[in-house]
Length: 443
Image (tube, rainbow, N blue to C red):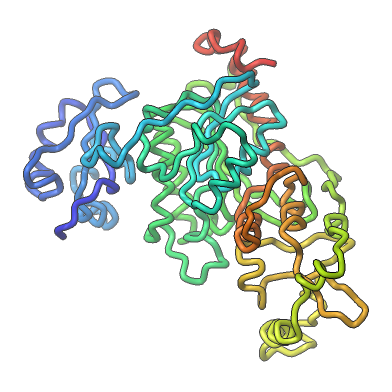
């Protein structure tokens, strides 16, 4: 392979093994042909160093287990990890600190989208100090909803020095779910470039070592490749220094939408101590908790005749829905009524393709009076996700639908964030290392 890249990974090894590793890498041709391995002190491990491995063949060797030095146990492979001075430094930039202000705690939001984590943590007194988002349709929405974010919202996280990201209490990220989702029939996990983005989270955690993190993905991650992918993810997060817990929560306890998501919470190992009464416990949804609003019918807007007509399916569209839904199974197996949202109950899971690929998975609003059903409006979709009406939407309607379906549910983030902040404040009261930050974190 002739292409050199910087996205492969790094070796972490004892400093005493540098020369041996250097010879092995040179022999295999896994370092730049006109250079030597890039050697740096490890940021948090004494007597250890990091070597950037930049040739794509290295990843294949790790996958099939043909790299004998790893089997000896003296070397640790960190896929996707980057060095803070890189093979291609012009691509990297230093992050700009966010505006200062009073806060109970600080957080960063990787793969921020429209800012669902920030919206969920703000009611708890959180202040976002850094965010990254590569989708240029979402960036203006983030700007509109979080004034001052122009200074700390960045694009591609892989182009930012991890060391320049401000210190923070909670790292949040909803890393791309398509590689692991059952809705994606060609899901490829880590073989998908989007699946590789997870390693950017590990890179930041390794360097910044925040007290805790909160990640979100689809439940399909639990079973993908018989659980192997989740095992790899959990192992990487644990090696970064964290106790890791995960749980599937259904947003239906908080919003009138059935939406199961996998939430992964990590607490730094040196802080999560049972002896200090500070071990984090994954919160349990109170029995009988009801969503707000209670039913999907309560999220509906009162539409003018013109606006209702705009969202009403044409005869051709509705015919396509019926044909696609029933296919060869017929009305008895798939009654078309199941395509209509239960106004006295909960909506089914919104997707980012709600209006674009509407034939199979989209639910519609029954209108009566002999009219065809209509689509939900973008604002109604945002209400189902738990965003309040003050949250600004994208100007392009198609973008607004896609943003709603791919966002996290802020009320769920508030619920989990509350438990994390309580743990964090408990740690503050017990750990001497946090004494100097008490005034910043406590109300």
